[in-house]
Length: 255
Image (cartoon, helix red, strand yellow):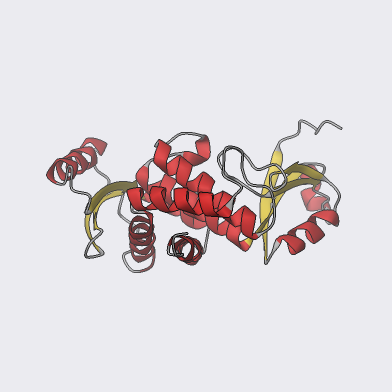
């Protein structure tokens, strides 16, 4: 049956411990619209989407009756993967979620999703090795090339600092230089200023550290940090959970 054309009123997400919990919850409604776990998206996204209609309990909200509510159901590891994608997109201007970004980053997240799928005994994304040994070998190579562990740890830790200790109020953007070797970050803060000033500082830092793999220069706007915080309130813990999972895999003995 085709979905109605009324506009969504909202959405919510349920994060379950494991696949069994996801399936159990999804089966309670029987209104699955997209099963991206059985058939993962080509970028590695995995989740179950359901759509229900809003039934108001009071006359005050009657105007919204019949509007759609999208429900996403996923496992903790699937959610950790999605959080890591959002963190990279918000800070490194990759837009992996939108089907863009650098090839190595896109490939890394497809492989990471495949590894999670193998652990959960579910189908891997298309164009992803189904053999665990082959998958880990390629994942290890890609992760090392990108220095994924250092980059994601640095990005998530710095964003947590900016969110929790250095108020975002009055700031418009930041230019950050991540020192991968010493795991330190220098931050230049910008208020409500001409965007060209932010871009100029970013280009200056890019030029200074060009070709040095120890440093990553990042430009991030406060609006992006706030969007990340709203969509993924526990993004720091989720990203660290993802990193822990990936680290254990790439540190497995070579076979």
